Image 1 (cartoon, rainbow, N blue to C red):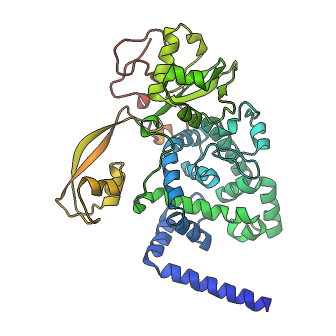
Image 2 (cartoon, rainbow, N blue to C red):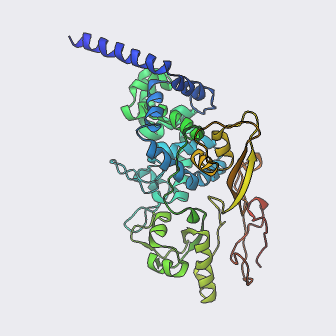
Length: 418
């Protein structure tokens, strides 16, 4: 009876998969997934299909939240994939691991964006105690995750196996290779823990979900206000509570806590090497200006690059004349808005547009110019030096600190401080 049960279950699963693939939208999923560039050995398996279906329907709200968080963290991750010479597609692994939440803690006590275990974190010299857990630091944890992934790739010489080993551990992966007699993930999949068996399919699905998000008219849900998403950071050496940072910067406690999740007691402890303080750009201006005016600039031994994770936007009225081949999804992606916004601005009752039609667009003009990832900076992070003595008066952003070696980091109306 048990054998007949398994045969019937297998038949029903096959019929269900065939029915799914007869759906035109599902056929599009398969075609899109298989036509994408992947760093792993790609198959459009039933698990891949299930994840896409789940996050475009039942977990649609989680999908929107991940997209919002990704705008904070993908640019940070891209810096470290470039630094380590790794493929930028590894950015999607943070979504697989934690849904892009830097404060996430799993049942097995893995922590942060990259769900780093304590043993791995300590091996890479992260501070982990009751005051500071640097596994939650988006910069330091990403640097460690990329170092670990690089070491796994050096061991297995294959990204599919390396990424799977990130989940189950290199020892478990070596045992699965030995037991199966294969180095092909799909052949040795059944020799791995159930979570790892689904790990690569989930990674493939998330590659699709992030690269084809424009198809789903999703509302991005940001964890903090849009004005505060343009955050930057500096280094603090003296002990400082979040209440003091609120007073010095004008940034609310909740935003400070979200941007600095590694400080467990709502306080940055004193440290000779310094700790990162991450604030919205306008708040960091206030913070630095306060300490300069008070004569306590020795609090800041050094200033690190002020990186705009989301460029500062100025909303401007603009327009677009529809051309042949245009559609609302591509236009929303082009103008960094949603399809719903385009329809609202233009009083559209459907998704249909026609060539020659004039559309109103509240485009977000970028100022200053963000860092751009290109072939020249793919495998390196520029050395950046700063010097700061005099602060000019009556400027729009009197404490904008500019990189001296890379014009890509400078605002359009850049000036330098000496």
